[in-house]
Image (cartoon, rainbow, N blue to C red; front, side):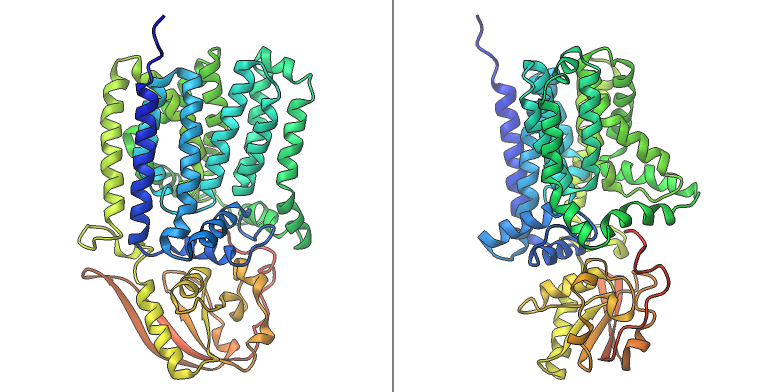
Length: 494
């Protein structure tokens, strides 16, 4: 009997470890993105959940910063932690589906694409969603392969983990149920208590989000459902944006191979491995495609589609033919794209639309605001006209002071709304900062600030190109103007 070939497992371990260590090193060399600073703000006000998303990203940031301080690298260790969990369970899952060689190729493709490469650096709710998604897939596969339904309890726990990351994790429950229904082993398991106990455990883990929503008038649930529907309309141009974003984040060749693999997995659904790939990829892909003419589908929303799509694509590619050649070219192109996206924030000479450079200028803005604060006195408050400015200033101003957001001018400040206390600002002198890249914010600032005195603006450059020109005002705060009808209940979704 031949000993099992351990080389693919060792190669996968080295590949995942090298990618993780590189991104931990890289994470300390660029400023926080606005979203990361915003989630860091959540992390220093721990709660059961938050207005925009469930809490696991913030809870993980609180863990890493509690151990290592508030540096950019410490905050982003939360992303590295979830990415490492994802890589391990993705490898284990694909190995069960198609074998070690396919698993290694699928992992290489996943680590190469900009979407997942950036996900190893930037902490967002997608990190815990994907780590939970990969765990749920693995434990479901293990339950079926070993015909041990007790593993479905672990699948339920993983589903709860994913739901604590992002609401998209709710898709896992019907997907796991479908996987069980379409497999004779799974149908036998459905006659045991284990699948239902797993679903109950997922619900129990998600309970903090439910409790938060009950305490806040179901605000987060409404924001992610009714508000998105209310801001939807038929705009065919959004389809081009949808496809373009996916092509940029996954790169064109691997995008085509991934979508083609999902189609092939549906066609080959009689094969249990391809059937699982279809079940865990096709629903979200179809849903996003159907929604795309009516609503802007963000580039990261399809992230859970690609793990099993890449698994099916790798299995098809290793069978030979045109897919093998296209796959090699696609991984090389994806790696080049990831190198480019990593260079953009740290080397201004690299060509990139300056307006879209999200990490540029925040340290300069904080230095300017700090100088203005010194002139006005120790009691000066600082407010941004949206959550991005507010969160970045909270992080980069000395001492990490409390900042305020668009709610001071009667707009919806997202999570900042729940931290707002008008009485704490009444009569105080402060600074108001607007980033003109964010439209229709603080338009009623003159009603809240009397007087409102314009200060010299701050232009931020990337090489010779202008990123943005921050507008600043001195503000003596009175009270927030009344919110327009419907604003408090249905802010425009981000």
